[in-house]
Image 1 (cartoon, rainbow, N blue to C red):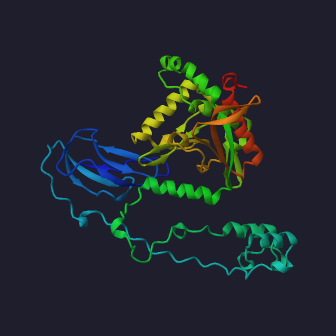
Image 2: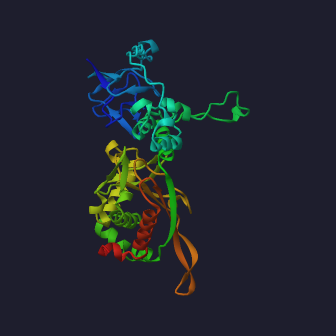
Image 3: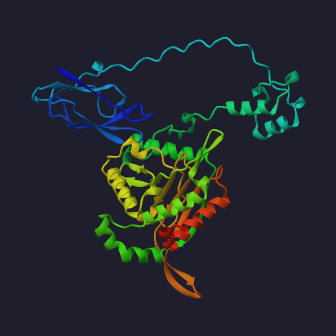
Length: 412
C-alpha cells in the first residue's frame, strides 16, 4: 500500500517551503523516521522523515520546487524492499498549479465626492494636507459644503498604498553582461531572501539611528580569567563574555522600558519579559535564535542556553519556536574581527546592541596613559519610540555594568 508523505505544519504564518534537497531516490529502501528530504522555509531548514518503512515509489516534486504545507512530497510503498531506481515521473504527472480565478466584478458603489474643498477647510486640515502632500482629490470630505476635517486628511493618508514589493526590487539588467562568461548565477535561498527583505523593511519603516560608546574590558576579563576554570568544572559550560553583556542589557532594559518595547499600529507595546535574541552567523545566513526569559537565568543558564542555540544554528536544527519573538537583540561582530559597525534592527524590535573586537588602546587612567583592552559598543534604535537620551543612557548603563561587573552580581 502506497503511503503519502506530506509537507508537515511548519509553524505559525509559514504556508510554503522549498524542497532544498532530496536525500532518497525512487526505489530506495527506507526505515521509519529516516530523513527523506530537506525543506527550506523563510526561517529554518527542516527534515521530513518517513512515517513507515518500505521503498520510495515516487517523488511528487523535484528539488528547488516550492510546495504548500499539506501537499504530497512522495509516496512510500509500505513494507516493500528497495528496488532499482525507477525513472522520474513525467512533469505532466505532477499536479498542475491551480489557475487563478477570474477577478470578481467590483460591486457598484456610489460615486465619491470630487474632492475636498481645502481652501474652505479649517486651518488644521489645510496644514496637515500641505505637510503630508495628500492631494485634495484623495480626501473624502465629511464637513459641510465639501470641507475636509483633520480626521478626513488622516484617513486619506492612511489609505495611501505602500510601495509594492516589485517596485522595490533592483532592476534586472536589460542587456547581456560583458563578462558573463566569468560569472556564476546562484538562486537566492528562501532564508537569504527573507534576511534581505527584513533588513530592508527595518530601514524603510524605522527611524533608525545609532549611538556609540566604548567600554574598558579590564575588570570583566580579569574576573573571567580568575574564575573560568572553576565555573566550567561546576557548571559544565564555558564562561564567555556574552553572559555578562546579556545581564548588562537586561539591567538597562529594566531601567529604560522603551528599549524593550515595540510599535504596533498606533500603540506602544511595553514588554515585561526579556527574551534576548543572539545573532548567529551560519553558512546559510544570519539567524537570531531567542534566549527565553533571560532575566531569570543565572550566568551558567545563559551560557548553556546560548551554547545550545549556537550548536543548533550551525547544525541547521533550529525550530520555528527558537526563532520566534525576541524583545532585544545582541550581535557580536567582534568574533569576526569587526572594530566598528552600525547594526540593523531586527523588526519589530526597537533596539539592538553591537559588540566588537577587543583591542589594546592607550587610555588615560588616573592621570597616566595606560594600554587597556577596549571595545566599541554600538546601539541602533528606532527613534520613533526611543529618544536619544534613552538610547545613550541605556548604552552608558551597559558600559557601567561591564566595567564594574560586581554590579551585575549585586544587582546595583
